[in-house]
Image (cartoon, rainbow, N blue to C red):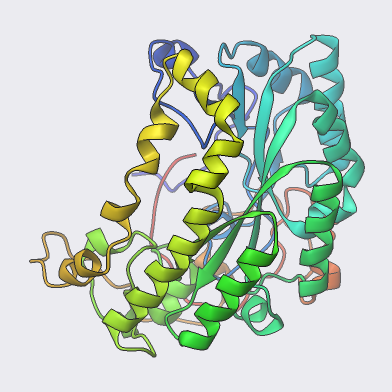
Length: 374
């Protein structure tokens, strides 16, 4: 077939919202029910664990503000997840959509994901959206130490990450954080995360570093895989060699996840949120409550270990040997346009607005073979 290509315009690629009109099981946390919307697509950063930049060739495209607000006005649900890979990279775009939302008198609760450095640089945009109903914010810290941030090529410092948390607290936002548990962790690293998670008010999630096809780590780590069972690539199983014995790794992982779960989903936390939970139940929205009782079935050491002994039904295929070290071979889609600016340091990486829609020089990696139309 033809090579993968971008859709001509995000403005004309609007969701068929009538197809979800009868569904009430879409939710995220206590935002129940919850619809989703896209204001932009793509990411100009190059984190090694992520496929957003490889898939879109580090291009970054935006929905025109009037079209974004028009789509938002069509949403019947009271809660909306803004699913941009990184929300509000360009402040003028976020502010322009806010103008359109205010003009249309749209009022909802919003959840979005962004980077710590984007929040710090464009604080006024997030403050504006806070007044419009932004309530929940997801920040992908991934690590709390310099070593971990460099491992994932986050291009942000620990001090900037912690400053962003302070800014979000000042806005009275409910913040969720993700930390990536590397298979190389020992008991001390898990204990450090447990201690830190108890010390901050944010919701902390813990996922296992998993090399997915389309990411740089898939190309660099896939030949070390201990399994190619498709079912284990779920960020809750270790598919790379662990420093600890596998069972001990899972014991530390589950112990840490239990601490995080009790912090925000335990009896004491739910008692504090009784009014909100009661409101959900009275409206017939029980997704959040039913989710609470699944912890033991999902985070279970015996079950996770047994999963590795199951017969493999679908085996992940490793990537082909690298043909050459040209960095653009990671891209699934060619960039929208070329700009000579290179991303070589946190300072330059923090200014993607200087090259909107661009594909700056990516890290040296071999090829990913894939074809999709977006």
